[in-house]
Length: 303
Length: 275
Image (tube, rainbow over all chains, first blue to last red; front, side, top):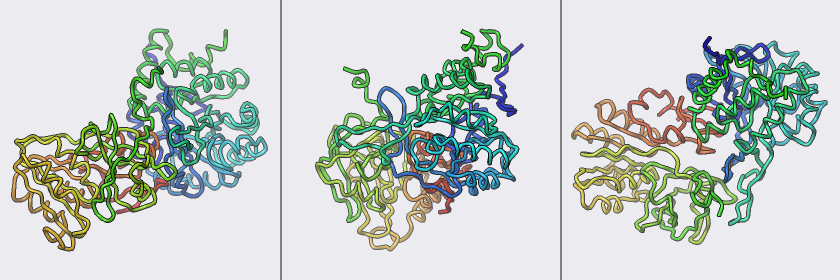
């Protein structure tokens, strides 16, 4: 039997396991369509807030010598109401809407905006490392995580995913709180708080000073987190962090992820990266005689 | 030696020193610097330019008369461009790139249409024309005191059959009227093999229409709100295209199918705004 790239996450059926990660190219429906045609199994929007956010002034991104990016775009986004209007006409693309907020009501109000949209899932950003009062600052507060996830689950029947990252508390506690509050899946991990200083001018380069490190340098860390979460909890996992090749994708499946997200690799290899990864996964499946992605998930844990 | 010293990572910010500042008009300056990479970029390519402590801007790479040097020509407008405008000789800026594609260099009878600092990629394009090309350069400006690069264009074309035309909106210098009216007149009177344009979007839109509707090969270099410059942030999308990665140069065939070109662009939050 020909192998299939289809996968399933918390009841969400995807034709292909590699999605566009949040924060990347996520503001235009035309671009979403193009990414889907180019091999992405789903697209995750930029994290949306109640109001439009301009984000930080440039420089908002820095390329690390030796690989990886540090970004502090500052969660720029058109706001949930504007974004919802834009995707109302969407028929074809599985869109996962990423949401960011400080209090449970932020999330409830935003979810309401999408009632006329075809939304595949909501991804709650509990882990952006460079904007105050949202993201990691929320993820680091178990009481708040509990309230937000509970509110989201009471507001919609659409599956909800929590995106976690490495903050000041043990991220596994955030995962456990989210699971206990009814979350349907976990995305791990977000970028890792980092910075860069220019030695000639002796000043931090990013306008926000701190940003989030992404790309190949964080892949081994993300892989470790996926392995830890899947070893400890029975929850569907979407692996994210520095995945740029089909081998990386397979590693994440073996560690326990049922799907993956691609971000920084687009900056290095442009959008062909989706088809390249899809092709590589299929080739590997043929060689190893797997017919579904699910057969590979978590295999590395038996050792 | 570390491996990355052997080859410059084009995405990594390199600090350069401004060696000379040329006042082109009261509001436009050219800042000249030495560099290994930027003097050799293709016409239309851009760099992300860091003004330390202020901002980072996408800038088309300007030519310099001296070898081993390149430049940026900037009009002071907002906080970022004024910051770059005010960098003195001896000041330092960071550069990364080059980014983006380049104009497809045709030969024969060429028309280059530039408005304001949109003339920068046109000047670099002039360094790539062949001696056998017949080149018309059309410079659009609001008024006489905003005209620049006229003598540079003439100088770069001294070995060609050429014509440099200036058009001002208020008629204070050169032809009187909108540059797009001159474009329409030129393409209706002569057979151009290719038209290139860079400048305000409405100007480019009409120029593309004038040429494309007559079956003339035409390319325009688009400007959009740009944050990363490398195809990650998505800020510069134009329909399904990303200006930084798919462009900034698009041809008439492609642009005529794009519903945002000439009509709308996105602001810093990513909200569509009409021109």
